[in-house]
Image (cartoon, rainbow, N blue to C red; front, side):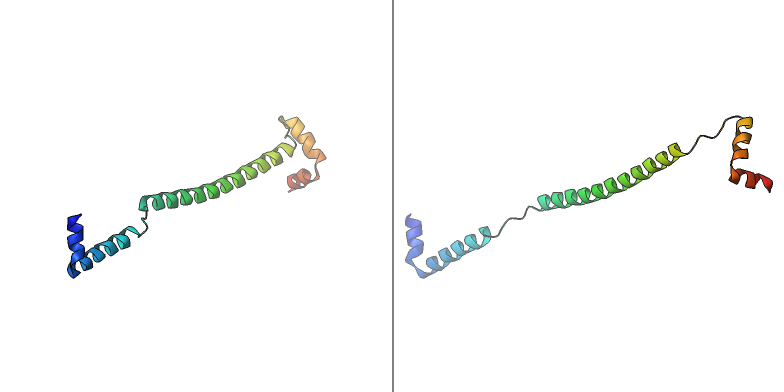
Length: 101
């Protein structure tokens, strides 16, 4: 206590104490930045963005596969043996046209 009073007793002590108080208020008022947290947030945001893009692409391809499967299922089955194929070809105009050439 006597040290503080002796510092305040002369002009240099007062200036030095004012400087120290100003320095500590200035330094400790600066907001601390957590760089690692910012990096983690940026990485997770980037990963989430690309995950959404990949999910959308996967959904598009799955839809294309479903449509192809539905189209394949809606096609009539091709006869297995030669006699059935020939009867089927005789009843189909496009098959008859191909075989004439």
